[in-house]
Image 1 (spheres, rainbow, N blue to C red):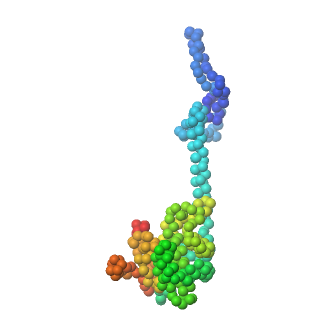
Image 2 (image 1 turned 180 degrees about the vertical axis):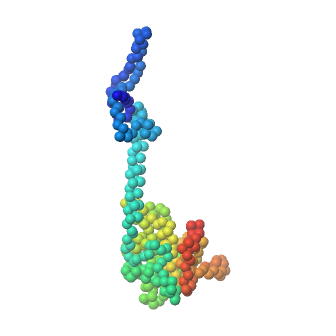
Image 3 (image 1 turned 90 degrees about the vertical axis):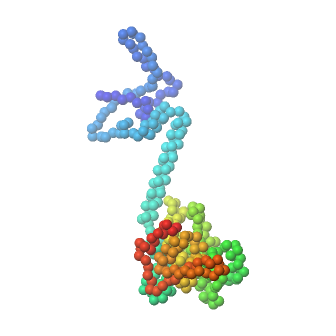
Length: 344
């Protein structure tokens, strides 16, 4: 029978701290005894079971052994530090478990959109490769459903009634983007056509505002989108271009793939508004992205880019125009976004 005595760990005895333990060692030759300070040990028999694998002290990590020593002999300061570290470890493990469960749940549960059906697997909007006219390649109905269009009518009234003075004031205040202000300044006179154009321009403004959100904005529970945005439009945009970012699903994020998708939708919406001849200079100013990336995305949606020097009145700025040719020729999936990361 083997006996083992421990003075630390869960099986160690809890002696009175006011007591002092000593052991005497008798020398048989001289008959004298020497007294030494010691700790209290409780010897217990150890029975080994061949069929049961027990975890012994040698299986403990260095940190676990050190924690046991601190628990048995450490001072109050070291014990507090150890307890704080163990609590942080538990919290960190709990957070990792919660985030892992949230990601797994998100991967199993597809995002449900409220509003028009959008092809979440494709970066470019729905299109007809066999269309005979540019306006039949990308149709506005594939981007803006009838329900969303109706929701836009109320908020688009501000563009319908806009005067030259309003446009000038908005430009001074920086309320809207360059592209939006240029469109509002050249609205058609026909009442129905003016309302339709205003709805399209307002939707374009919402797309640009979503793209313009900064890193600090995405950390907020409520995204700072334009005031008065209809709930249906907001749900449709967030469902199509963002994902839920945390376990509580109170914050959202826009990964690079969906950001590229949003940029393609912005370009196509601009093409629709400008009759499929889009001035890229204004778009680049509003998006604040590298020219190389803008060119890559423009060609990804099937456009050709024509460049020419402008008049001296605008400092010989090179004007770039995106034109949608017929028949539509889209680059293959590999070359479509080749170099996109470097052009960010």
